[in-house]
Amino acid sequence: MKVTVFGIGYVGLVQAAVLAEVGHHVVCVDIDEHKVAQLRQGVIPIYEPGLAPLVEDNIKAGRLEFTTDAAVGVEHGEVQFIAVGTPPDEDGSADLKYVLAVAKTIAQYLNHSTVVIDKSTVPVGTADKVRLMIKAELDRRGVDIAFDVVSNPEFLKEGAAVADCMRPDRIIVGTYDDKPKDVIRELYEPFNRNHEKLIFMDVRSAELTKYAANCMLATKISFMNEMANLAELLGADIEAVRKGIGSDPRIGYHFIYPGCGYGGSCFPKDVQALIRTAEQNGYQPNILHAVENVNNKQKQRLPQLVHQHFGSDLTGRTFALWGLSFKPKTNDVREASSRVLMEQLWQAGASVQAFDPEAMEEIQRIYGVRDNLTLVGTKEAALKNADALIICTEWQQFKAPDFDMIKQQLKQAVIFDGRNLYEPERMARKGFSYYAIGRGE
Ligand code: UGA
Image: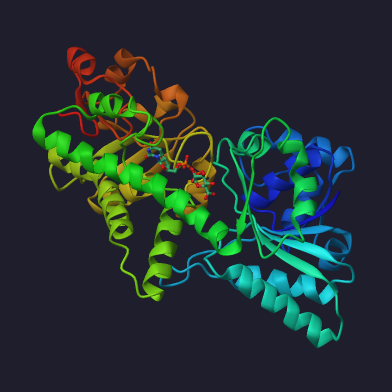
């Protein structure tokens, strides 16, 4: 099938590569000339396991192409994905200007019937706007071309994006009527062989499904962070509580890990956007407000513990930091807890020696060269002469370190662990002051 994808960010690129891999002929359109030039040579702008070979193989096979020429893309596609960004505007609402610009572009060049697929995370009611935009532009051109708009939100996770896209739990498709269903079935047939994953519904429900899913997951995390803080006060161990409640299948083990707060490009933005949507419709979303507040406070938890141990003035102190990305297996540092932590440490006069397997370039790009930040090539080098170690991301290589070496390198045997990687009792036996989340000192 001939597929066009507008927007080669995270979602667009992964989706395009996976659709090409199963045999569709995919043309990707982006306005960023540099990105397109790089991608044509197989150089991908993000770190995502398994994505680079997939892109490379499919370019070679002639099933994956990149262009800045929107006319070529529109001409090509039996279906046209809109997968451009929806950044938050000043009040936290999702900004639709890129989505609507693509809708207009599609209508400007359209000369055959097509199905337009909203893949971007967009507020409820966006498909209506996309439909109106296309209709208005076709009317302006004085042409009558049949088109459908469907809402097809993405549920992939960074770090596991290729696998999530190859083997989706479900494929949600919101349609206005039955017309586009056959095309959608054909498009997703390779992913739908073993059991039925397509769930058709109306467009507004599909749009809300995306936000409801992310907000439910964010709620689980904030709930557990609240329980962790309570466990701390009550002398309980949140890790025991986590296992205890996770064994109830109605609760489940997923997404109940307490930590130093959720980050990334999705949860913070989507919780905020749904709050705005609710408020614009005259509804106060109390749970969502609480989820956001608890998370903002949780990002202060590691700095608080550092101050509790070292006092308010950190002048002259150096902290080793392991993990900068918002979660493992990605170089993404958007809304990462590590940034809130570093900024607080700098404000209190401290310096940071940080190591991350993938995200150091991103951090360098954001903060530039500065005296109070040293990025080092190994986790061991980060420890040298630091006053304490702080862990923000649970990369595999941090899970079983050589504790004797850590003790030797640090000035004091102190660890602040934002991801509960180690056992407090064992750490005490090894002579560490060990601070974790919801586990007591
Ligand atoms: C999230 C959703 O999980 C995806 O289903 C969705 O498609 C995606 O957003 C999106 O809307 O595009 P992602 O942001 O890549 O995916 O990352 P997650 O694995 O969900 O992690 C988000 C944050 O929650 C991370 O900072 C992670 O450390 C934190 N987290 C996660 C916890 O603190 N505790 C947990 O138990 C799980």
